[in-house]
Amino acid sequence: MPTISMFYGIIIRMYYAPGEHPPPHFHVYFAEHKAIVDIRTCEISDGTLPGKQTKLVLAWAELHQDELKADWELVMNGEEPFKIQPLQ
Image (tube, rainbow, N blue to C red; front, side, top):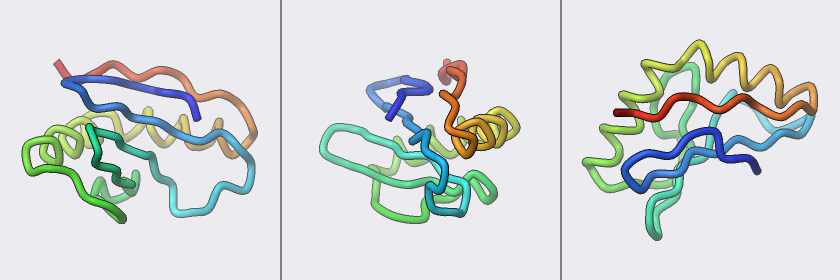
């Protein structure tokens, strides 16, 4: 699963495999925490993150929602997603 962005100890990844289950989403890892974020709603759909990291990830997702949607299309075609600028 390629890493598409990293910031403040947070790792953002997206599987690239046709048939990855909908809805469009990405995976977030921070220390021992894991979460899945729905790209359409920019909300956590599974798992948990600490409060501060949740705010950072969701703000990043809103800023890069179009890029995340484009990456989702790539992964649905079995192609590697592009890297996305980290939150600064």
